[in-house]
Amino acid sequence: MLTLSRLHKTYRGPDARQLLEDISLELSPGDYVAIIGESGSGKSTLLNLIAGLELPDAGTVTLGGQELTALDDDARTRLRRRDMGFVFQAFLLLPHLTVLDNAALSLKLNGVPHQAAQQRAHAVLMTVGLADLVHRFPGTLSGGESQRVAVARALAHQPQLVLADEPTGNLDAGSARTVLYLLREQIKAHRSMGILVTHSAAAAATADRIYRLAGGALRPA
Image (tube, rainbow, N blue to C red; front, side):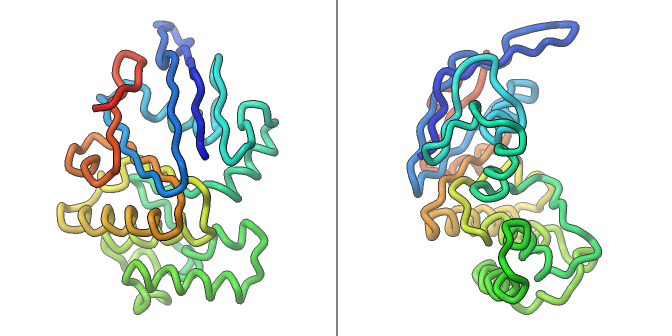
């Protein structure tokens, strides 16, 4: 399970303010939720807290029985690598690696031997409809194809938690629908937990539950 318990976070810049206040949320395997909110509402900060990239001022984040907020930097890095997958608005594919090698990256970072990583990555690329592009390089792909590679990379090591930050922001409507369908399908198939952060009501509608982040509070939309 993923459990967020009474998270607080204050922005400490020149205009110090409470960014997140008393946020709690629970996800179980197979759950897929969307978080919507205006720019500056704290969505990226909340994702960073969930991923252990930032620490809350108060409250806890627990994933699979491990409290991220009690771990040191190295332990949080290892947990992210092993138990989380990320899909971003910018595809963040490595241009010098093939589609297959990009998709295998999460596996190799987790110590999976080369041949086994390639086989697993190839299987995941098949599920997202890219088996015929495995030897291509990112510079030759469309936006939709690139994001499907990013989805495959995020899911290849079968993480407990998938965090998707505006994954369709750079895509046309048709490609966005395809990516959102594949993301949901793969999270459900692998019994992962998924959190989609988006400005798009249409994208949010693909999730099981929708929450709105506003005024520092997270509430059902």
